[in-house]
Length: 168
Image (cartoon, rainbow, N blue to C red):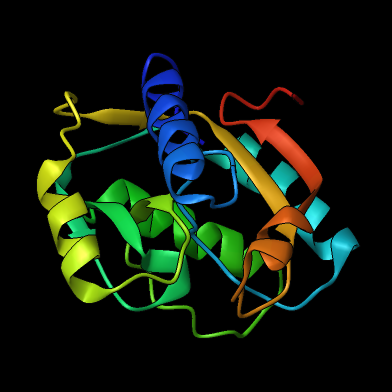
């Protein structure tokens, strides 16, 4: 999860787009691992990553759109060594062999839309941040793949910690 002031900036964009397009509201985040539904393993992985990692700073490289529901409109970030290490720590600690492909992005809107509308929207969004620091990690129980507003609204946090090692 992004730290302030980025969290508030992204939440404002998400909330505005959700109102404008009758879409779900969600907390801004970058997904770093998708694994099996094992709450205990997720809690252990969160605790381990919180002990091993410090906040991670990522560089936005653009606003993109796609036909994929969970990537309708999003901020794409550059991958760096710090994020790769974090992703590896989470996967190993979760004892999960899923082959989630790390493509760091922060979604701004989840909505099935026409291509031309998505493209116009992507071109109209400006994020005034040259770097974004992420300092909180959460394990979220969700349907995979997430394909609808109801799926998003059913997400539940099962564990959380700050990357300084403190429980949140």
